[in-house]
Image (tube, rainbow, N blue to C red; front, side):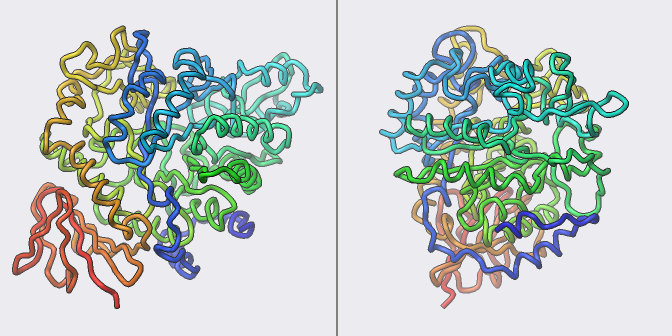
Length: 579
């Protein structure tokens, strides 16, 4: 395990093909033998601030989540993950925490939280929390003490450094949100490090007392019944101890997707020393131990942004010493060209031989999937068909899957004006990058209610007018809606062990725009196929072979003489024996 994590990085990045060939030599995880609930789980992401406001203050809250648990349950998911609910000055909408062991008053209180967990569990739903282990708010008491007295008890709880000889920052590290990753603190006469906003100073997790304080916070929530955590930004758990400057980016080979727009200077560096460094894994090991010993099993899902999350899934999840699964970014902001997409699927599949990941097409930080992935879906009918295709891919590919709120409604990404923006990232990089607000607009529940049923007050962000006629109440009654399909498909998938726990092989893209892969195990194999285009395509009969087409929800299931006719954005499965 240590060897996998600490390999020296080559100056020239290897190609995807060479990496896949290397990983293929390792022993795969035996298909169907490991059936922990989380391996094939379907989870739902709740961005609490925009989900449902019960109090009328315009901000979503825990009582609002509780009101909508029946909706979440109806989708057929195994559980849900809540965005941060801890006390925060809300400079980054909850990702800047002042207290790890409490609920922010804008979202409710601990009684509301306990009731929500109890109600969720009574419906058979798991509850995961967003945990931000890498940084706090600069208003956290720990940071106030740390900047006040460098020799005090909290003096080294954060990452501090003296100025360079010219008075500037100690190295060239950049914040992914823009500008230097270092801010001068005159009360201490040193710089502090912040990978993101300057109000989010990085914790020194290599110091045992700091790490144990985070672990104590985990135990607090675990004892309140949570079933696990989504760990935020674990690529920033540690940084280079010698604070070496990053070299320029070498664009040869696969490059991790980075946010902030094409002109963000952050993209110009190879982040060898401020992201995903070898010192992170002992921290991950300690976090894993924190959730062990609980029954039923608790889980850790780690977000790996700004890095090659597919490749890193192996080293962070293999052997059961680290995370249970990596929150994979491979399918967010990927190429819309089928051959490139197939290459990415092949690449990530190689690391699923030994590691595990959660399949994600969009989240609270990205463009909504139906817009980002299917720019050629021009009509509403095509958008709905495309969203169904994405759901099929998400839960027929190996790994678990996380649905972001609104995806079940096939919500398109809204058009935003500058005056609509609330996200500091978008404001900083407008117009090159509009930020994350388009994914965070309030959930439309009822087309006839004020603000589409999100709130009876003034919402913190306006509900996009184009979303109002796509409300949940309307789609619940529409048999052809993406939401009705998702319910039926996840229900059908529960009876397909190959789709939850089977092995995976991705086929070459010789029939583009068709994409094909195989799930296998226990003497069976299942061919999965999708038509990633707005035109009807034919899958030749010889590709099906002796397999039998399955009549699952929305699937192409009729064999003609020449093969299977797959409608625009269509998909299907065929099951056969390998014996």
